[in-house]
Length: 395
Ligand SMILES: NC(=O)C1=CN([C@@H]2O[C@H](COP(=O)(O)OP(=O)(O)OC[C@H]3O[C@@H](n4cnc5c(N)ncnc54)[C@H](O)[C@@H]3O)[C@@H](O)[C@H]2O)C=CC1
Ligand SMILES: CC(=O)[C@H](N)C(=O)O
Figure 1 (cartoon, helix red, strand yellow):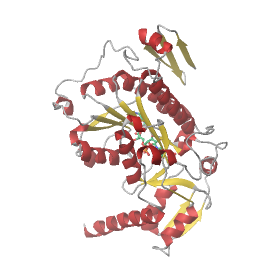
Figure 2 (cartoon, helix red, strand yellow):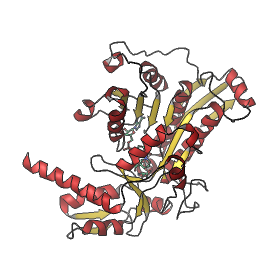
Figure 3 (cartoon, helix red, strand yellow):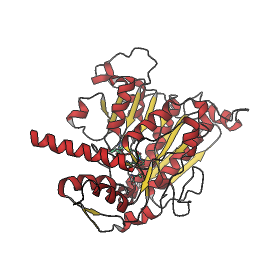
Figure 4 (spheres, protein in one colour):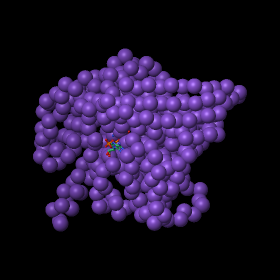
């Protein structure tokens, strides 16, 4: 049961999920009244009062707690927090951002234990996005200015656990939005090709069109796009969102999505020379190499606000089917054998998603340009795994 009560001078929300009651008191006070009245001209209402009450925080982090104790010099660099940072994309993004802004200016967080190499590569902190006060402490104590919100349950895993997906992807997002608005953060939330559905135009799919996804993942991502844009217009939140295609990476594994086959095929091809694909050979989906995805994320975060005519953009690189990916791989590994054992859940999802993505607005507004097409992607992935195999033999 979800109940919302909204008054002009007070905003109280009670959220009950799966029988668990989680009362959350939010106080907007005067800002609600001001915001309702709107601002002439730009249509944006700058946030002048906290979105939620910020009167106390019961769990203050002690001054000697790990990296919290470092004193930050005033620089132009943002202080970045990445949530859900131990998934397929977070570690790579932290590496890119640390190269640009300095190691200690980028904090990875997750609810899982980081592997040793990640733990020793820069600041890491435990953070459950469902714990609002703890999130606020982290933002305050570390003087965070940018928040990259990666925590989510992906499409296939989400369908297998709808209640948890709703909680993490929707309730978690509400916490993130309020904290970002309260503290004037620049907020990046990724959306996905999965934010479209069977009634969307699929070839190509433009930025603005019908969005009626049929997965909890897609529904939660449309919700995130709309809520982020709403907070932008209502409270002046600096919300930025890219709809990612399926992302392909060599050194990190996907977290349970529909596009996972396009990563797994490389692992299996190198290890066994065989791959069993869970999508039909003619299933066309937009895909992108991870380096392009992470660079796009940094570029849109750094883009001057006046270049952004929208706050949610499609980004695109390539589009292929399992059959086409196999053919490209077989140019270098002619012995590769691919068979098909269709997963009906993933197939139905894939059949409702875009086949090609129209990202002309991102290219026009902030100069988006991808580097990797299918041949470069395949070459890069194969090189990575061959080198890894060679190193394993040497050691
Ligand atoms: N990888 C892809 O192909 C695409 C990813 N995206 C989006 O990019 C973002 C990152 O994706 P991936 O890294 O692939 O996801 P992933 O599934 O690999 O990682 C998600 C992370 O969120 C963490 N998490 C789960 N519950 C949490 C909680 N309560 N508090 C904090 N963290 C929690 C998990 O431990 C996990 O490490 C997601 O929002 C996803 O929707 C969008 C399109 C494509
Ligand atoms: C495209 C995505 O959002 C993700 N990889 C998934 O398949 O769920």
